[in-house]
Each structure stands twice: as C-alpha cells, then as structure tokens.
Amino acid sequence: MKPDCKFRAIVATGMIFGFPGCAHAFDLTGAWATSAEQCRKVFAHKGRANQLTFTNFSGVYGGGFIAEPDRLRSKFENCKIKSRKDDGQTINIVVGCASGIMVSNVQFFLKAVDDDTITRQFPGIEGMEVNYHRCKI
Image (cartoon, rainbow, N blue to C red; front, side, top):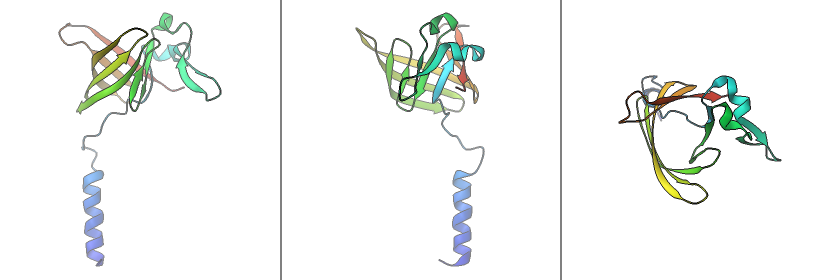
C-alpha cells in the first residue's frame, strides 16, 4: 500500500471510530442501587467465585438491580434481555423475567443522566420515575 493510501486509511478509520459525537450504546453493566450511599448494604460479593449478589436485607436500603450483558437481575427475578434500543440518552429494553412461578415480559424505559446515574421512567404515569446510581464495589 502506498504511504498516502495508508494515511487515508488511518484518517478514515479515525473518522468512523474517533469522533466524540458518534452514538455509542450506554454501558449499563454493573450494580445499580437507588442510593449510591447504600451500595454496600444492597450488594455483596459471595462464594468462591466472588459473585456479585444481593445482601439479605437489600430491600430495606432501597434495593437495586445487577445488569449483565445479556440479563438483568433483581433479588427475586432473573430477566433475559430480549431486545435493546439506544436512542441518544434513552434506553428501551424488553426483558423476559422468570420469578419462582411465572414468566413475563417487562419493558424498561431508562434515561442516562450521566455515566453513573440513570432514571427509570414509567410512560403513562406522569411524575413517576426512579433514579439508580452505579455502585463501584
């Protein structure tokens, strides 16, 4: 490849991947609690694998959820992500959840406030929303 062709290829690659204005999917992976100050009371690492899980009384401290690349977990439900659409700061996720006795589909509307804060919105219920904060544990 000629030197000026290499330069063009590098510039083109930078244009595709390097501009800060490009839309990227919000990284939801991690532990999310309703209060950043309560993270250690909601989540704990347990077992030989040091797996992130919920404390016994996590609900007393506001609760939260654990997001993994293909699922969302709460203390009592394990949900597989069926679809996800990021539209700017808005994230629309449809999950299939299995509790002990029932399977259901749930739709989540999330708004990214910043890298460590999201708001769950409930369309059709004006003023109803819940803030979640990323836990660094």
